[in-house]
Amino acid sequence: MSRSRTLNFKIISRILGILLIIEGAFLLTALPFSWYYSNEQTFEFHFFDGQHDFWPIVVSSVITFISGAILYFAAGKELNKVISKRDGYLIVSLTWVIISIFGALPFYLSGTIASYTNAFFETISGFTTTGATIITDIEAMPKGLLFWRSMTHWIGGMGIIVLSLAILPFLGIGGMQLFIAEVPGPTPDKLHPRITQTAKRLWGIYVLLTVVETGLLMLGGMNLFEGLCHAFGTMATGGFSTRNTSVAEFSPYIQYVITLFMILAGTNFTLHYIALHGRIKDVWKNEEYRYYIFTILIATFIIAGTLFFTHQEGVEKSFRDSIFTVVSIITTTGFVTVDYLVWPGALWFIIFLLMFVGGSAGSTGGGIKVVRQLLLFKNSLLEMKRLMHPQAVLPVRMNDKPVSQDIIFNVLAFFLIYMIIFAIGTFVMTFLGLDFESAIGSTAATLGNIGPGIGSVGPVGNFAHIPMIGKWFLSFLMLLGRLELFTVLILLSPAFWKR
Image 1 (cartoon, rainbow, N blue to C red):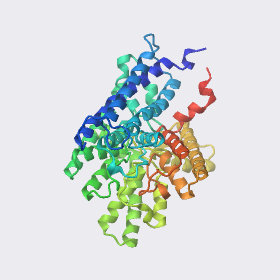
Image 2 (cartoon, rainbow, N blue to C red):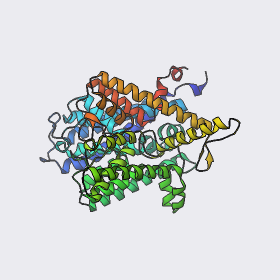
Image 3 (cartoon, one colour):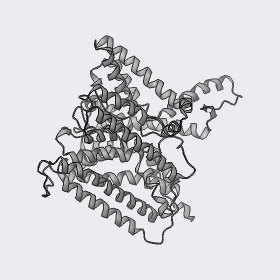
Image 4 (cartoon, one colour):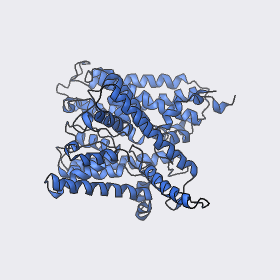
C-alpha cells in the first residue's frame, strides 16, 4: 500500500483544528457591535430570549476555539506533513461543513433562530456566499449576530482555505492541493511561484477593496456597522443585508457604489493584481473579462429599455434598477433593489437565465462561471467546423493560447453534471411540496450560490417556508455550488475511499 493513497487523518485533524481556531477568533469581531448596540449593556446571561447576543457569541467562540484546539493537539507530534490530493478534497469539503456547524451556534444559543436546522441553513448560506435566508425580520435581530452573519460571507468569499495557506508554512505543510480544491474555476491562477505568497496577495486585494468600499458607503450616509456589513456582502458576492428590503431603501449613490464593487468582486482577482500594477490594457485583453462586461451591458440595456417603455419609469431609474439587478444576479451576489418578478415575464425569464452565468473564474462569484460559458460556446462553433473539415486540427483558443483538451472535457462534464443536479434538485423540491416555479427557483438560487430565486423564494420572499428536509438538501446544493461540484462529488465515489 502506498502512503500517497492513504488518507492522512492526522494532518486533516491538524488543519481542521487550525481553521476552527481561526473561526473562533473571527467570532469575537462581532462583540464590539453587540456591546455598542445593546439596549441594556449588561453582562447577564440571556440565551434563548432571541434579543441578546453578547454572551452567546462569547460562548460560541470558546466552544469553537476549544474544539479546534482538541483537533489540533489530537494529531500528535509525529506528523506526516504531506497533503495529497485526496487529503485536500476531504479537508476542503469538511471545512465548509464544520465551520458552518460551529458558526451556527451564536444564532441557536441566543434563541434568535430557534431551530438548529434554520441556524445551520443561514450559516452555510453565509459561508458559501449564497445569501439565501430564513429570517423574516432582519432588522429585529441583534446587531452582533447581524455582523457575524455578514462576516461569514467575508470569510467564505475568498475562502478560509486560502487564508490558511498563509499560516500552513509555519507548520511546514504545503498547501497547493488545498488551493487546487478550493479556488473556483477550471484553472486556478497563481500570482506567485509560492502558494503562500499567492494567498497573501489575494487576501491583500480582497481587504483593500473591502476597505475602499466601506469608506465610499460611509460617505453615502451609512454608519460603520452598515458599511462593513454591506461591503462584506458585496466583496464576497454574498448578499446578506442589514435591512428587510435589502438595498432598496438606500440612496442611488449607494446602489451605484455597490453595483461597481459587485462587478469588481465578480472579476478574476488576478486581473485586479494586474490592474494595480498599471497593466490596464492587459486586463481588457482578457477574453473572459470582455465577455463578462458585454454580458452585463447587453442584458442591462435590454431590461432597461423594456422597463422604460412598459413601466413608464425615468431613464435613470430604469437603468439603475436594471444594472443593479443584472450585476447582482450574474455575480451571484443577491442584493436587491426591486422585485423583478413584477416585471414583464420575458424580463424575469432573462433574469432566470442569468442565474446560470456566474462570475469570472478566480472571483468570489459562484455559478457556472463566465469562462466555462465562453469555452462551451467556442467549442460548439469549432465542432461545426470539424464536421466540415474532419482532418483539420482546430484547438479551442483562449486569450490567443490553445486550451488543452482535458480542460474542454472538464468543462463539458461540469456543465452536464450541473444541469443534471439542477434537474434532480428541482424534482426533489417539487416532491417536498413546492410549486414548480419555486422549485426551480430555489434549486437555481442555492446551486448557483445566488440567494434570491423566483417564485416564493424570489427577491421579496425567503426560504423560511421550506420543509426541514428541504433546507438540509438545499444546504447540500450550496456546498456543491461553492466547491464547484467535483470537490464534493468525488467524496461520494467509492474509489475515493479505497485504500
